View 1 (cartoon, rainbow, N blue to C red):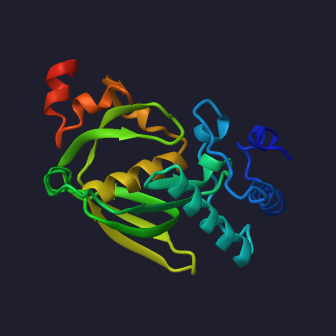
View 2: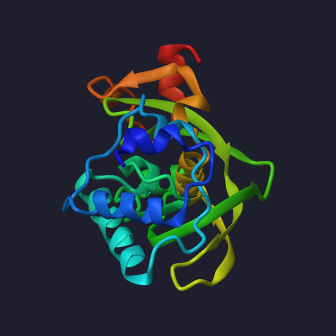
Length: 218
């Protein structure tokens, strides 16, 4: 079954054997292509992962997603971004090298993390607004306001369910990728007046978005 045909039936939970066969076809490519905005897989909630794949295939999927994320390069990738409608995402960020940027954006390192069936809630009222981009929406960035600190519950590849707190930029990454699993793109939450093409973004590449606010009027 092709990815397009798979999505035709995505409103109904797909049988494990259909999911497994589709994952196998995606993994036949060493680095599967990233699906772009406009594909239905990015606009439908992904299915919960409940053992549709054997351990070896799950491990291959996670490894492939990590390599696709690094090659892009990006700091997060959700399974729907390679055409797989399962609630699985991978995250990893080295943090900001510039200490001023790191402090302004609370962008410390995020070790490699696998989120299976993640859900999150805001852990406080504080919110941060910064530019975000997306591997499925190449060429543009826009400002998104998100909770500064969240609490996320997810399952790890070994089957353990954990609840962990994230704050600052790592919290932003968790939220961005979990939104993908809910059929949302960052543009659904963005301040659209801030939308900036990549070639214009260096103009607003300060640690905060203050100059962009003044220049673009948002």
